Image (cartoon, rainbow, N blue to C red; front, side):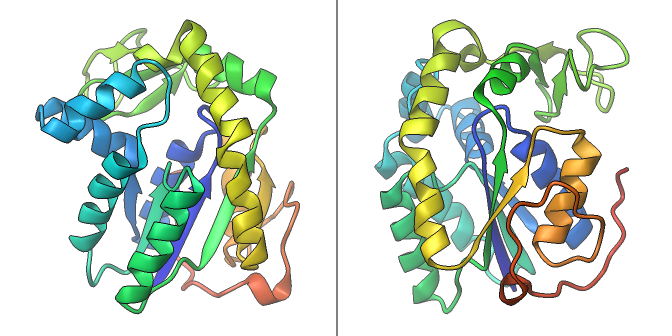
Length: 241
């Protein structure tokens, strides 16, 4: 079993890359944002509490996030691997995750940071739209839908998240670059961190991501890759190109 974390600021494309990677490797994709939105849609107490922070572009408090994510992880025992997207975001969450996995004889194997300049992130977020049915992600600049305002995959309407507009965007990025960024040092000390260039074409980022986790493909843009950090996954073919 291999467990991977994708770290990146909002708009870095980690959700898109996590979807592709989970299909390629047959891993379970756990996205904290999806868990929050599911809980909100079901109007659970945790979901409603999380919404007040998400709408303001603030980090959801650790006790809410940990409760949701750790509960989801407990449901995935026996999975071939877990791909975490958007979690952890704080040192407390990272330490709690390590502790929880150790209790069941597991660990985080690799952590990949998608590095994208702040200016590019702002442009991406301002143009990002999401479908209401299944949260498929589009961008008017780099990945527009075939029909404006409609999801290509399920036909549901597209919308822009409240925290992808105005001051909320700036606040979310401020939090990432002042707080979440410290996770890089935490995982670098554990010799698990890879850094790749996320400011390139989606398929090129994906090639680099596969290279970072040990699948031999073109690795243009890879910034860190040590031989002792590579574990071999069984080679599979992605269903998306």
